[in-house]
Every structure is written in structure tokens, then in C-alpha cells.
Image (cartoon, rainbow, N blue to C red; front, side, top):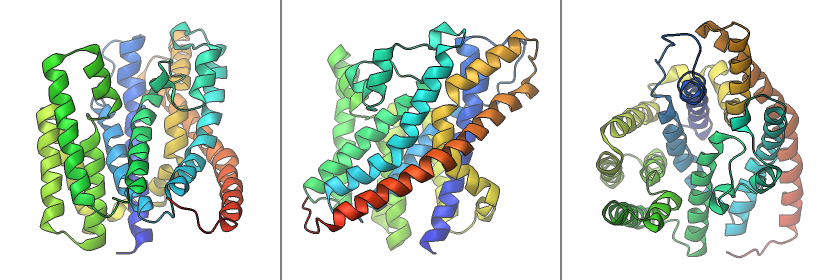
Length: 342
């Protein structure tokens, strides 16, 4: 199968995951935070937070492929920064401004929080996220830093040793926290992303299956990751992980043709700006609608539509232009430094 085809399907899958997360936030999490005025509000998307874990599996697949193609550690980190920061910074500014003029005081953050958020390392420094969804960026950043260490020690081709050790260390961290249950062990568990390492490992294994075929060692590592998931994250989490694994196997075997829909592929392109911009702004819209008497679930089409429009505008007027400019600038700079080392 061609690389282009594979990426089309995975991008579409990312778009579906983004919409599921949006619906979870608007239906379930909004109700937990503020309470929908309408009684018996639908709860069908109570499982929607698992969509983020699908993002992590996709990230393991896509990012490990890029790790194997980059020239150096700095090359990898620079490309990741170019991909993420322009869209992220713009989303922070818009969200901070909209929340600042809203009546939902619990969503507000201070100027210091906003400034630290611009670094994307606010969770590490103990500052409040401008938008609640940014917590997952901490997990992604930790994964990128781990990949950078992998590149520094030139271990990127020793995937089975690396992933096996990663799972062992993560299990030790979780067991230690389970036994000791101190603030330090809790922080270690949080910032080591040991709760999510299995997702990235599953994605990495699927990349190798795509590249080299369904060898037993890759399937066994996925099985070990699933056992880890059931053991430390619970039955429901493990069942959704199995479901995502099934979806990936279907994609690898060309059984998900409908994912090539132009609409779904475009939704995949919107997924990153949509994820970053939808939550707090959507909450503000829902709160305003319900205060005006528009309480039925059908009116969710308004915050969803506005979030999609914002994501579309960000994609075409922020993300793409900034990427084109910065990648061109970086390419020219890199051409002048052909012997960059790891």
C-alpha cells in the first residue's frame, strides 16, 4: 500500500477522533462543569474522552516514522515546533481573548498563565492551562522529548528493546506510585506519561507492521501493551484500546475504504486547530444559548459549526501560511549547514 493512501486514512481517523472529543466536551464535560439546563440531556458520548487515546496511537505511528527520516535531533524538534507552535499560539490568543470578555469566570486565566502557556510547558511549571484540552499537549511533548533522547543515543532502529524497556520502566513507576502513593510518586507517574505510553507503543508497532509486515514480534509487543493497559488503566480503557487496535488492523488490510471520503480527510486536516479552539469557546457559546432559552441538544450544531469555521480559518490563514514560510526558512538555513550532527 502506498504511503499517501495510508496517510489519507489515518488523517480521516484523526478527524473522527476530534469530532468525538468535541461532542464529549460539549455534552458530558460541560454538564459536569456547569450543568445543562435541559433535563435528561443526551449522554451517548460519555465515552468520548477515549478519542484522545486514539490520537496518541496515531501520534506513535506518525511521529516514529518522522523520527526515522530526520537528519538530527535538532531537525526533529525544529520540525515539530514548526508544526505545532503557530497554530497553538494563535489558538491561545483567541481563546484567552474570548474567555476574557465572557461571563464564565471559572474559565478565566491570568496574564502570567497565558504567557507561560505560549511555551506549551505550562503543566511542567505548574501554571493553569488557558484551555483544558491543552493537558494532552504535555503528554505529546513528553513523547517528543523521549524521541529526542532516542535520537541522541541513536537507538531509533532498536525499536523492540526501546519499547520493551519503556513499558518496564513505566510499569515500575505505576507500581511504585500504587504502593507509596506520595506526591512525588504521583508527579512522577503524571510527567512520565506512564498512563499513556502503551498507546504510543501500539502506534509505533503498527508503523513497523505497515513497513515490514505482520511479524510475530510486533504483534506480541502490541499484546504486551494491551495487557499493560488492562492492568493499569482498567477494563473499559483496555476494551477501547482493543477496539482501536481492530480499526488499525482493518486499515492495514485495506478494509476501511470509507475513510478515504474527502469530507473525512478534510476533517482530519482541521483536527489540530479544531482540537485547540473548540472547548472553552464552545462552552461560552453553549452557556449563552442556554441562558437565552435554546436548551435542546439540536442547538449544539451552533458551537460545533462555529468551532469548525474557526478551525477552517486557522488552517488556511494561520497554519498553512506559517508552515510554508517557516519550513522554507528552515530548509534554507539547513542547506547552509549540511553536516548537522545528532
